[in-house]
Structure formats: C-alpha cells, structure tokens
Length: 497
Image (cartoon, rainbow, N blue to C red; front, top):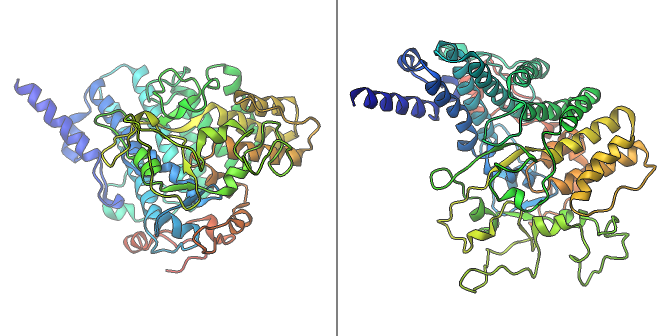
C-alpha cells in the first residue's frame, strides 16, 4: 500500500509539473528531484510522453480553438472585438498579446516538455524498440511546435535542450533556415522510428510525420521533395479518403483512415467548448466570399453556372457547402421539438463543420469532444498536386489527386488541358473549399504571398478596413513582455519596441 501511494504521488508530481504555465523562459517541466527519481520504467516514460501530447489539448490554438484562425482570412468574420478581429484589421504590435502571446508561449511550453522527455527517457529500463518509438513521437511533436513558431514569427529562439538556468534561456533568435533544418532532422528521425501503420490511437505514426514534413516543404517551396514524400504516402495505401465528409469532423476517429494526426478529446474529463462557440454564440461567422467560392454541381462558379439561381442560391451547389455552413433559412430542431436558435450572425451564416448536432440543445454547459484534425489524407492529395504542378506542370497524377478529392463529394473532374497557371488556381480553390473552416487558410495565404492582395478586398461586416501590410504582417512581432525578459531577442522588422 505504501509503495502504491508513493507511485501515485510521483505520478501527480510529474503531471502537475508538465502542465504548469510558468514563464517559458524559466519553465522546467519537472523538478530536479522528480527527474532523478521518476524515469525508471516503461510506464513512467509513457506517462511522460502523455505530458507531451497533453500540451496539444491544453493549449487552445493547438486544439479545438485552432478553427478560429480562419477568422484571419477571407473565410470568416470574427464576432467579438479585440483579439482576432483586431489582428484581421492590421492592429498587430508588440503589445497586442492575445493569440500572439498564446501561440508563442504555448509552443515553447510544448518544446520544453518534449525536450525534458528526450533528455530523460534513456534513464528508463525498457525495451529499446519502444524507447525509439516514444522518442520519435516526441520529436514529431517538437517539430510541430517549432514549425508553428517559424510560420508566425520567422527567426525564433532554438532550444535544442532545455536551459538549466534563466540566464541560459536568454539567447538571441536563430535564423529561420537553422530552425527549419532542426525541424527536418526531428521529422526524419520520427519517420525512421514511428510505426508504419494507420493512425488510430492518438499517437503519431510514420504517415503523420511524412504529412507534416510535406507541409513544411511546401512552405519552403521545395516542390520536388514535397511531391516525392506526399507520393510515398499515397503509394503506401495506408490512408484513404473517408466516404463521409460530414461525419469525419464529429465522430470518433479510431476507424477513419483519412485522419493522419489530431488533438483528441474524450468526455467527461477531456472536452472543449467547440459547440458552444460555433453554434450557440456563433463566434465564427462564415463570410459571403467563402459561400460564393463553392461551385455549382456542374463544376462551374456561381458567376458562370446556369444552375445558379439567385432566388435559391444554396441549391445545386458543391455539397461541402451544406456540410460546412449553416445557411439562412436552415432550421435545427431540439429533441423537444423546439427550434435551435443561436445568437444572431452578422453575415447570416454559422459554421457547421465540427458542430455535433446530436448534442442539441446546446447550452453553456455543453461539453464537446470532437477531435481537432491537424493532418488528413485529402490535404496530402492536394499538397501532392500543388507540389507536382509547381515542379513540372499538370501531369495526369496532378489531375488524379485533385479529382479524387472532388469525386468524394460527387463534384465533376477538372477540365482537361489546363496550363500550369490555371491548375495552380484550381488547386488553390480546391484547398479553400475542401479545408474551409479548419484553420488552414491563413497558412496558405501567407505561404502563397497573396494575403496582402486577398485580405484588403474582403467585405468586413463591421465597416472597418481589413489591413494586411506587405511585408510587415507576414510575420508577427515578438511581444514586449518577451523582449523585456530577454535582451538578446531582436525585434522583428517593421515592429517598433
């Protein structure tokens, strides 16, 4: 009994330390005593790895709240003042805080936890094949967190190991190229050590790391390499498109071969407020620009199709519209026969993707456990198509990849004989509608270097001007609180301090 109580206390110590929210510059996931006494066997190592994954669920923009990022694009209008709405209007400075501070701090929390895991796992008495796999998972997660930082901030502080003292943490940022090289090394290690199987239990697999590496290579415009890795995923046959686009975002994922990595929830202990945010308060309001982007069922845009009827604008449309957006006139019924009435939307639309209608009636006590999907096979197909088209033009494999995604929702294939430039626009359009309301468009607009032309043309329903300055807003500023703590951190260009 005494030994059981001691083990439980140690377990509590490690979990509480791993989930602490101190300043990242002084954050050590475990105390010195715990590190010296904890890492003894496979069970304890698995507990440490669970702490690495826990960082995804406990940090809002690596989990359910990640869908909010579409509010920084032409897809979604954010309802509330401050935060995302201010950023979409170009109000981004070293004192902005909110999501900017959240992503910076959350990413470094995850990195610190992964570093601590990797620095201590070798102490345990366990099977080497399991140790190697667990390390691969931690490296995959560390790469994920570091790429978040690179995407938003460019050059960032690179901690290959956790600093031992606060002074050791006060170092200058490393060039983006150096951080990306470190990320690729982590992902290559993960690819070589993770199991080559479907993703089914929340643990990263080889395909997860390959998909993330493909995404990063696209960011770097390393087209040939990106196409080769994505093609390896496709040829493996491990993953496939789900037959049900709608349910993919609300049902449990253990049997869904499209999902390649996600942040997972499970009621009653692990839950989010996703349904409250989306369909009670209506925080994210799809824009008319997004609704208009969905083609008619003949494959033509609404500006050209004879099937489009202004009196019934939602008929004869790509079915992904109906499965992603709640449109005016659509009525949801509560179990008691009453109508579900979300708070009013300024655009007239509500986000339906990721909403679990089986939870009606939605109230402020609703607990959602829809997993947030970071990587899925449809994205890999579209990433392959983009990379191959950019590398060598629209060959048949490019057509096949895009048409597979369209065929899933009964959309006609792309027209033949497209030029490279025409195919590029088709792929970008397909990414918009296939991945809408998943928080990925902000990433796409920035890597395509089109955000500064797309965003100022958006109709902001609040009457304010949408602002995305080039090049300033392609990077976010280090926040003043971090600059004050670390005098070696040099402010990003175009941001005063």
